[in-house]
Each structure stands twice: as structure tokens, then as C-alpha cells.
Length: 140
Ligand SMILES: Cc1cc2nc3c(=O)[nH]c(=O)nc-3n(C[C@H](O)[C@H](O)[C@H](O)COP(=O)(O)O)c2cc1C
Image 1 (cartoon, rainbow, N blue to C red):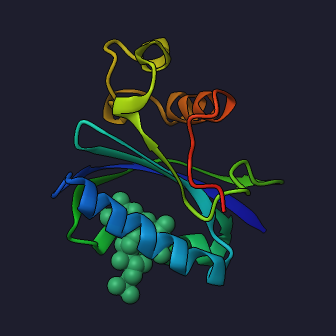
Image 2 (cartoon, rainbow, N blue to C red):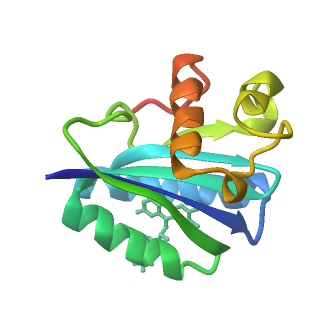
């Protein structure tokens, strides 16, 4: 039983080192519990998709919600899935400051990451677009 969960949060420390530490911890841990996904960040905001078994995703989200490195954790979307969308990434990354603004503008009022003001479906559409434009790095 595979599921996908999307959430948004605000970084407490948006420095590159802090984000790198989160990614490296994720890439080390996720293969052991079959989690794949993508972490986007821009303007101090995270948008993350995690996919995997229902128990593994639920357990990880429980840990993530308690992590003091971010705040305002908000669930955007949760669904049962037949197949993974980000199966090639133990945790892909997208630094949105390096992404063409037109991609962000396509899904929101301003060319910035604001998952708090759009639907979960729109945030997922943005992730799909980032994948289609090869903006996700860190394939493992
Ligand atoms: C934005 C963000 C994304 C995270 N993504 C993951 C992830 O994909 N996989 C993971 O194992 N930990 C991730 N973490 C770290 C977890 O919150 C947590 O530190 C880790 O699961 C270890 O939990 P524990 O310290 O309670 O044992 C993330 C943390 C933050 C702040």
C-alpha cells in the first residue's frame, strides 16, 4: 500500500548548510524505510513530497512535524497511489531561487513559492512541472 503526502513549512534557519544537513540526513535514512520524494525550498519555505508505504510515511511525517528546524508545518495533500512519482530520488532537491520564475508564476499569483495560499493539487502540479523541466537534482 503506497501513499503520497505533501506538506509545507517555514525554515527556522534557511542557510544552505542547514538545508544540506536536512537533505543529507534524509538521503541516509529514507532508503532504509523505502521513502522517496522531493524537497523544494525557496524564500524560507519548504514544500516536500514523501512517498512510500503508509506506515513508513505516517511515521516519518510524525517525526517531521516535531522537528524544530522548521515551523508552521501544514498538510497539503495525502493520497493512496498505485505508483511512485519520485521513485528515482531518495530525496530530490529543488532550490527555487535557481528555477525559471515562469514555472512558479504558472501556478501562483507571484513568482514565489507560496504553498500556503494554493491548493494541494496546485502544489503537486508545480512538483510535476519541476520534474518535467529536469529541475530536481540529487538522483540517487
Ligand atoms: C524540512 C524537513 C524535511 C525532512 N525530511 C526528511 C526525510 O525525508 N527523511 C528523514 O528521514 N528525515 C527528514 N527530516 C528529518 C526528520 O524531521 C527527523 O529529524 C528524522 O526523521 C529523525 O527523527 P528523530 O530525530 O526523531 O529520530 C526532515 C526535516 C525537515 C525539517
